[in-house]
Image (tube, rainbow, N blue to C red; front, side, top):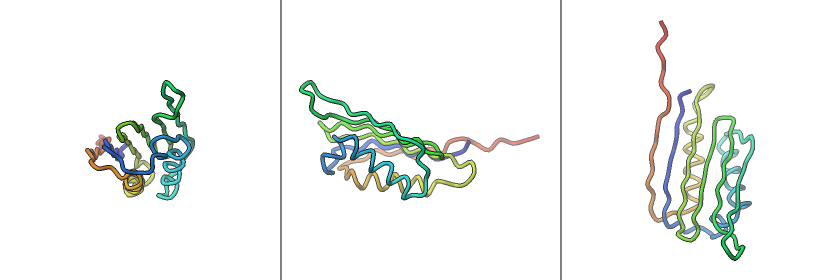
Length: 128
């Protein structure tokens, strides 16, 4: 089950407001970047939050990949986003593909500041 998990907290994103506010726009970005990087989207679920006046607020969403998943959450009122890209490397090394999706989504969001973590998951088990 070894894999790569890329995690980012993105602050004060300078992108078009639609990326932080509109479910369809954010879903399209995540699904398109996954496919473009050579990963296999199996399905998406994105939820549009609304404020008290019924106006669009943040979005939370996931893209389920054959290789694992992408999760993203937006706070448009502060311009902040959390992003997780996780791929397993069971049948092939997907690390470069994960890095491409991660980099391209971050570039589209254009944050002022990033706190990022790169986690290698799993281990090789020795057999007797």
